[in-house]
Amino acid sequence: MKNRVLVYHKVDVRPELGAGCISPKRFSQQIEHLLNRGFEFGTLYDIRKNQNKTKLIALTFDDGYQNVFLYAYPILKEFGIPATLFLITNFLGAQNTWDVNLGGIKYQHLTIDNIAKLIDNGWEIGSHGVSHCMLAGMPTSTIREELRLSKQTLEQQFMTDVRYFCTPFGKLNRQIICEAQSAGYQGICGFFPFKYYKENPPDFIIPRLAVYSFDTLRALERKLANNWQIRFEIIKQNVVNFCANGTVIVHNLK
Ligand SMILES: [Zn+2]
Image (cartoon, rainbow, N blue to C red; front, side):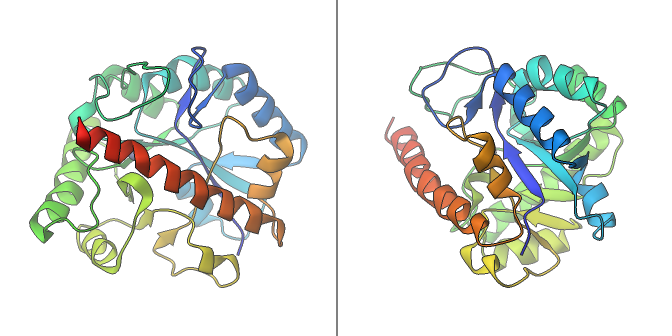
């Protein structure tokens, strides 16, 4: 199995002690490095339509932070690279409330104007739910509302198709997958399940690997490798996610 999708959260100049924030300088180095290695960039839709183009990869930005517009977009624009945003409808233009980072920084989410500008420049939007709640274990009615209402809100607001759903906190199960299919999505993103290291996932499931603040350029290449090297990155993602679940617990205790 080959991974063709990278996940970013924040690209910001403010140093944060977590794994999810990359400095603009580092982000720029990563993009230049991948371009030098012959990779091309498209949206999720592009890569799924061009399965044979193995060097075509997609950048996805989860949660829709405003720093993506301020710092990542200008860098990508310079190279004519589009990306895919996963937005949370309750947080459009709002301040983040669930992210417990060690720097105590409160992050702002993208405004409607920011998003419209990104779409105008070829970016794609997907849904990351209404409220960024953990869907696994939720009642069916909640899962349905998170999937359907967020899709409808984004499509009406931005007059564009919302084809993909990205489940908050990465946890997928059969029920979420079925509900996403009946809500009209064409694909769903979650963690990169370890079993897909060897076997191909069902077409509806889009595996991705996250880029962390401590990742080297070598690690970045491993995430896109078509051999055993990707294993290490899948294990790394599982460990980071395990630790990140701590932030959910901390938040719930507050
Ligand atoms: Zn998220």
